[in-house]
Image (cartoon, rainbow, N blue to C red; front, side, top):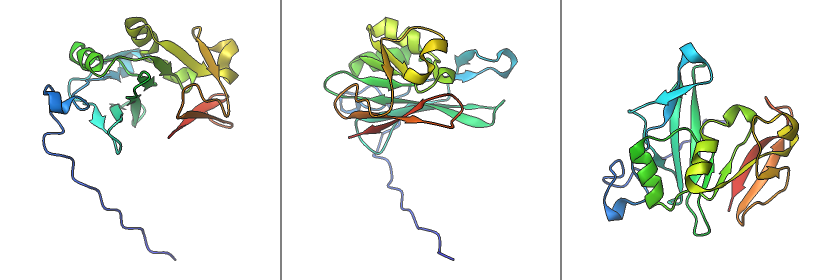
Length: 178
């Protein structure tokens, strides 16, 4: 039997949890919404959740724990010179929308499956962003998308799409970034 791998986690940079300063443009607090178990399918603001910078300075994540399902929901923002990409975006507080404005807004919203539409339409309207959804769900998707993505598509340089089979929805999308 192999012994477990030891993983070392680096400490976050000082003040990485605070927002507002010019030197802290890529971090901050985006208070996402959380699922309200009493009203399945609706989301409400969660003032205790925050956007976190991930392992790369151009990637951010905000999450929310869903007590009714006992799991976390996640959203990702890829900050890039050609326009930022939001993946499966949860709702944002007014403060968080201003923060996203400071980061350049959103040019493309990628929805990985029809269960993850969340706040995609609202973000797309606010920043006049295109919406991309899974091609395999095109006929039954809850709203129209500007792009329909499938296995091997690259909607932007550095963003490659993989279609998953056997997942909870047909052609659920996974992404790889360069």
